[in-house]
Amino acid sequence: MVTAAPRHGAVFAQVLARDLLADGFTEAQIFARSGFGPDLLTADKPVAAFDDIAGLFEHAARLTNNDVIGFQRGQKRQMRRSGLIFYVGQSSPTVADFLHNIARYRRVFSDAVEIDTSSLDRDGRVKWYFNVPAGVQRRQYVEFGASGLLHAIRQAANRVIRPERVTFRHARNTNLDEFRSYFGCPVEFGATDNLYVFRQSDLSLPLMTSDNDLYAVLLDHCHLVLRDVTRNVPPLIVDVERMIADRLASGEASQDQVARALGMSPRTLSRRLSAENTTFFETLENLRKSLSISYLKDSDLSLTEIAYLLGYSGLSSFSEAFKRWTGASPGQYRMS
Image 1 (cartoon, rainbow, N blue to C red):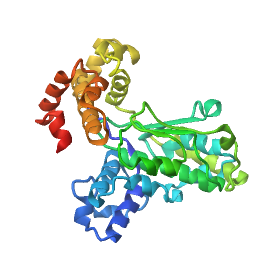
Image 2: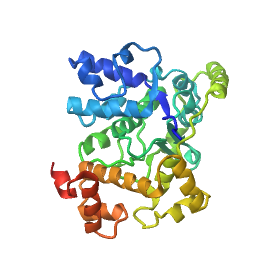
Image 3: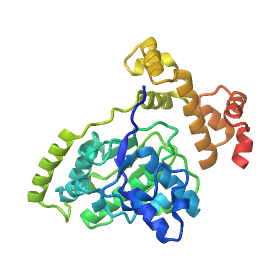
Image 4: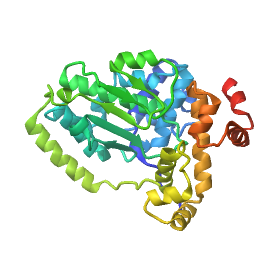
């Protein structure tokens, strides 16, 4: 059974490609080994698989030798290019309404992103993640989205709003001061969630772009659009990976534990994974491989710490597994 990859608005991938072309890179360089071709440059309201969009941002970081290209581009992102979802946010009465509406109507723009504002009014928290397998590299796009969201809020409120805290799930050990300077608060990488924590006083701020009449019209429009949007159901493998990731370090990432967390029996989970042409062990191994590469490339964690985070009993078992995956030891890979 093949599950369609979640789709996402590709307008910012288009803008990135056009800017790279203007900077002197050739179309062959820009689209090498990507899911896009030159037709992206002229497409009208492009939509693409999120994997391809995130991949283009990662490729751009390597091509330009700029490890924060996504983060920097988000700070000057023109949100109006997002279309309807942007105008609903901008016309909202307050910062909190802006965030709630972006979360509520995200399907207008994307099948890939999940935004949780369920505790926003209580403790100022906004969480988000992308419904794609762990192997999809997305660090640049996650950082692009994070800085772009705050940029849009600051523009709409016409003031420099600083969150209390920002965290990212992925690892990073470079350019940390740049992140702290832009957000104006502590920033943590390698955390449990992609997370913003806002002050209640900031959430209640009125937006300078608020328009009650336009707001009512746009809400009705969003309801109609969402009614006709067919949502791609997240692959089972994504749910399994999330459950595994939450349990790796505690040593509780067994098939029995994950099946119980998903509300099914281990046999049912095995059967459903088989229908996706995989097994629990393969899913666990693929996630461990992806996480280990990220930790080795993008963090200063020791090999022993990485082994622990991945749920291995010791460094030797981690090293054996990593060499099986890559042909190199963790130490050799980090030095390469």
